[in-house]
Image (cartoon, rainbow, N blue to C red; front, top):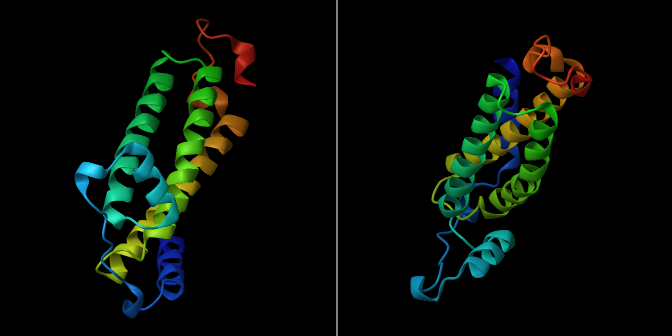
Length: 153
């Protein structure tokens, strides 16, 4: 709890004052392509909520389903590793895009909240690495004979 409050205070100090925030124009919706959306989100030219929510929902749903499949024994340990490695690239893209587009909102508090959630995703990936390296037998229930016991190390 104290760490979370410290991190929020640090983000509040590091996030610019209200005079920098602007409401970004996104152009004509009929001209929008997926390439243009990804390009503009990488360059910081899209409204924050249009960058934050689609990736946030898809990324967290994917991570949740992967963890549940691994806990139920439907995913092997190596499959769990591969899915997290594949999702690492969109997660890095999303984190950078959210930080670049965080000024494209009407309030400083939305920018602070979005940046805090991106740091929470980094923390989540760090915890998943700790689970994989130090506690695989507990998380993946390697005591069962169905799984390849050697893959838990």
